[in-house]
Image: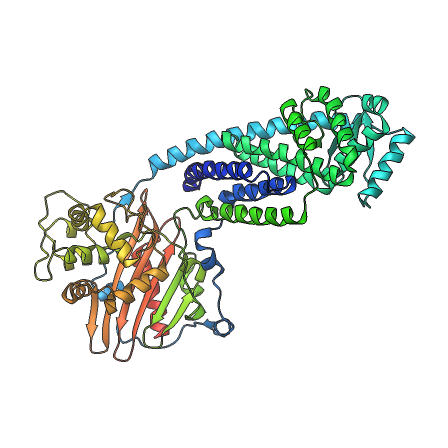
Length: 595
């Protein structure tokens, strides 16, 4: 959750652009879009404001659905413990070359900053909610003191308005001395409240206009709109443009209701309706209730409404068609911002894997993972078949940790910083907690002991520009190196999914990138764990250690057998004890039964 709050505040920069686009579009298309269409555009805006709080990565939305063809849905398998013999041992102890050394990274600074943001934001939300509840309590007192309207003339007008608008539901109408302007309140049990002074002084024609306006709020479901606006105002209390947008939505709501009323009236009644609003203008100083819809909404807005009535014409069929087209185009542009507004997917948290042409079986390997949250991905190159445990986790990206060193070494070879014959690098004497790190290294020894300083030195020589170029060329995960940080692959900005790990290993095996064959062979040799007459086994562990706890464990690789070549990736995550060694053990158990 610490990343959510940081991304949420960064996402508000996109919301500024979004609000600007909407306000500009409404201004440019004000003669094309009807009042109702302008009002309805704000509901698209409210929907987009909700996206940061949805636990969905819109950038990987298709992948999250993980559509399987009917054939693939029938191909589900269950893996059971079989008494099969593997042609080679996969256990770390017998492999002899699986050393899962890693250093801990700290998130204390990030955690403190995110905690400050949480407190800052939640404080504002609670204050906004408190103010809303306080006003609600005050309005409840007014509601409790209100009495059903006694005037027969008003009740008769009200029933006529209900019939005129084809409203079959019985909506009670009350009078009160504590309101100066009429309002409609309540979503599940809507009620109309009229000031007693208005009932006493208002002419029948003006009263009809008032009642028609309030009932339009009911037909438009404005009580729900008020609730959504109040929620958005609380969540985005710190955002001035969002507050401006919500104010504009309230104004457009009243204009839409005015237009609906005018559509019911004859053209010669428009002036009388405008005069009704003018007579109500003296009551607009009364504080508005945030959960109620009424006729008064500020003197500036009242002038805007009078001007709208003065030039109002019932929209022609051609104008409605042009308006619908403009509405759909604007809504489409706004919806295109959805991936940028996803706080959970802002860092491309899921891989958008195209499964259309894939032969996939979803398998049950839960018995191997125990309490770990994890997944297993297996690809048979010859049969072109994928077998996957936990598909949604298989497309979720996380830090690659030391598995990235496979490609780190390849980049250095391609740039000539190393050669297959000479990959020596002298130790500078800096003491490390592992004896295997406190000595000179070659690519093979550094890969075997997962020596961080060796690969960080290569990164420093490569530079962030060349690294980024290679990451784009390979399509490596989210391709983010966080400004060139030396630890970008250690529980930091760079992230990759298990599916992508297997795809990259397949590309490495086939050298689809067109790298120098001798460089590819050098990298492959550096991750060779065992070689027997039955086949060769390649693999690399990775462990994400945060504040001294192992939270992310990887084991990726492939097996080259006489009759088939298979690629695999296992990822496990937990609050602690999720390391590469355990991921390798789980891989060994699954492959022993699967192959």
